[in-house]
Length: 223
Image (tube, rainbow, N blue to C red):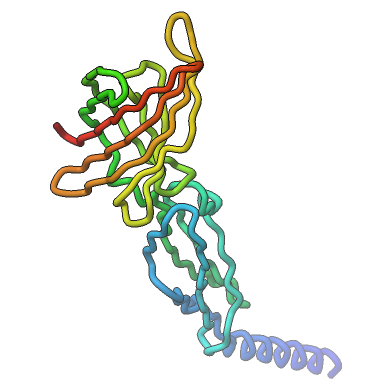
């Protein structure tokens, strides 16, 4: 009789376990993850950026924590393309992800290229023609790096454009140039023409020792 009772209890326990496991449902539905804001964003170099983030809800409509990372690490002061990845896990381990692309761009990027250039003396008579390459800075917005200025080899200056690209400013810059080498100081500014052909006019002062000269460099794109 005792034996029969044990068998009955075992069958009952097995049936209970079977009933419990057969009724249990496994959730395989990942959370719903929604970006707040645009999927693709372009911002000016050095400008502030606020990531609006994302929202995630599990299959029952409850909010789920969202984690975010950037590849490479986001830097508003460095030109580049940054991919933000948002991820959310529910309690069952289901994962949802979404991405946002943020492009950090120098606003002067459209001025990059090869320019034909002229250099004419105002105090002092000279005329030079040469080719120069202008590239946008990767760290300072609206700054253009000039690989050759005033027809001087080794004279690699930079100019800063104003916000609407109608004027440029070349702050004082010093170079050790020539043979025998001398100290050259350049400073200047001038208008910028964006269309139909991009042109930069730099009216400059050059000081070498006790000698001061003035000139104008004109950079014309694509000619």
